[in-house]
Figure 1: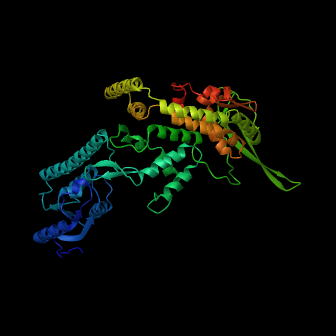
Figure 2 (figure 1 turned 90 degrees about the horizontal axis):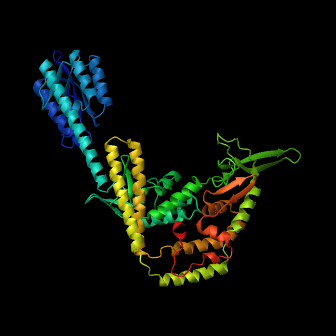
Figure 3 (figure 1 turned 180 degrees about the horizontal axis):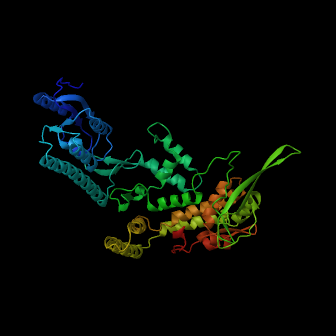
Length: 518
């Protein structure tokens, strides 16, 4: 409650106390302490307090509602003075400080009373008050810059400022980031599940929820949040802060290779699949084919036709070129989904590996795996040279940015690419040391996939066909004159050339040159 002194001759004052949770207020006396001291000051000097105002908000920027209301009341003549603990309680920014000085200049404020600062409405008094306001602003600006500088240095040291993502914990003891051993395995599993390309992001969210990874409202992670998790480079050891890219000095949860595989799936899938309904049927083959005439993407469409005689509604699904190439007038016709599906089925069958040959290849791989002892020293030396070359490029890139030869956006984009490449090479060095013949396991997985192709081609799961088509053809699948054509990549190309699989049985002691790119 305000202490009202019934003295009509005395000037009327607002008593204003403020404290925020910002760093610059850590040493400031509490609200209760300020009120006690200010009440004593008012009583000691016989000041009339029309109202006590308490505000718990930072004064670094304009916009405090209670403060602004107080100055508005002073302009209307309700009071002509303010009593406060110190000038920095009134203003820590130039706008609020300037408004107080202006009210003094115009006579609206005739007195300011502080416990720790002397003021009189004279030129000298206003000069000293302006200096006090400026000092308060300088302190806040310096503290803010020092804080940002400290956070940037923390990022340079390899530790991301702020809260770490799911799967990690912030260790308050040494300000480091450590792996959350309870959550991290589920994050790894989520990446591995989605990297196979046969599930929706929604299922990843459901999996995480089954392991207790949910929102604060006990709900599954939204699809956009789950997708953000799957695209967060923090998990393989690189993070962004303040628009810059930094290499982390914490243990990565996943490999760069697994992260890249997930990004490839996300790119192919072009976002989450949506559930089909009457108004929005799924267009399963969107994003997988290009027009053979103009090079633009093939998109799906549908049209519903009503037959009056039978009162039936039939929805026809078809695909056609988007015809967005402004340089070429594309003349390609549309193709029905059934016709397109049949052609893809026939093409996929050509890339199926017979189980008899698959078994022979697996036997040879088993022997190759047990006998493999070839040194990877030469390969690792080459990778180290590439890492050193990237370090030199990063230094030259930074020098170019500091010399203002390139702009900030170009610097950040180029740095991200170089750091990502460096991380890939460093990971390859580690993997080569730990696993000689690291191509064998991916090759086994490929053999397993190749034996499934025929079954997938015959199935009615169009989404799964799309996933396998993307693995086999990448972006080299075209539609022209209602005919689908494409050449398989890497091992798939060899398999199509020799359906028996003989060309894929490796010679003992030699690693296939294409397998590392699979």
